[in-house]
Image (cartoon, rainbow, N blue to C red):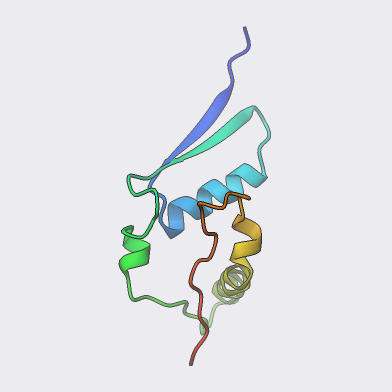
Length: 99
């Protein structure tokens, strides 16, 4: 019997969800499944949702600039990437650009 490998991520805030999303898009090399475990199914009480943070976009190192541009672009279209087709689940992340 062939064993399948899976990845379990604890925490579904911005970091955990991001890791789960991008790993699931790259399933290969024997990894059969990605599971993200979060105690709050709505993610409304996760540390990310409760923070007042923003997305810093001014850096002096090229790699940081590229990462922040990628992150902001992803957030602008997150609802398209994250739509599960489930009417009980909103893929809206609440991204608002101001400044």
